[in-house]
Length: 357
Image 1 (cartoon, rainbow, N blue to C red):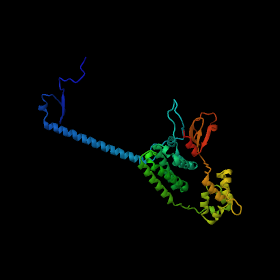
Image 2: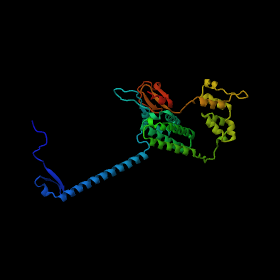
Image 3: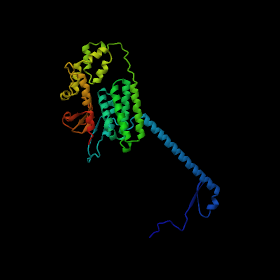
Image 4: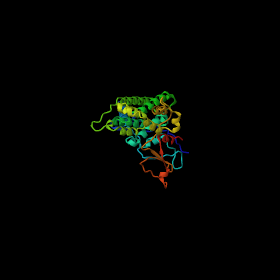
């Protein structure tokens, strides 16, 4: 049997580093050729080279970290897809493993472009509000970061356009209250990520609220016709297009003439019939001393008891045949003979329910 261990009969060769390079020595002339001074000098050079190497590595790592932080600060959505449609799979198959989650759908769908579209803005805002109420712990870390980035873009759009101020303020208040409750339960690991990151995000929310509180609505410079210059019939016709009673109250505070028009009983009756069913209205009837129905008071009472009717110009759609989630104006690759019969419109709550497995 061959001997596989180290040969004990010979100590082997020895190499030392000198000014001219590495030299091979034997046991006989090792002490003669290599002096103690050259050996110590070689060791010092070796230690010096190691220190320089460690310093260069630390400098490189620090530079890479600074570059990465700069990229993360400049790029608000570092890992964000801009897809018009996605395939929603709820179980593992031979062709596809895993399932699609709410966070994955929120990451991949193009919500950044949706907030720039007037038809989809209210839809996205309502979806952000529903996620803020109950779905934040179910989002992944990347999805939570994208959520805050999209919210920041929404706030910036409102500040630039000076429109939809109240819904965004309500959204920020809802998100802040939800985060206060979740941060207190940090021992239960309800939120993904460091708690300091969420505290920093809560500070950003407070800053956004302050900016929205200090917003100054600029009057148009044009000297054309205004709302008060129109006939009363046209003013009422425009007021009938408002779907929120609080907008009517705010409009009535502009001037006494508009305030008188906003007290029209027929206006509030149509608003009640638009948002609530006849059965709900019958349960909350309020009659004045003169025997008339107080439609304005009934509207706000019904608003505290029942949710409002939601209607959006453009929504997300779901194909029941292909299991594809897509925006309305996107031609998804449907294989059905009649794609329109397989398409269903999704409200923001339906979008969240789609991922409740």
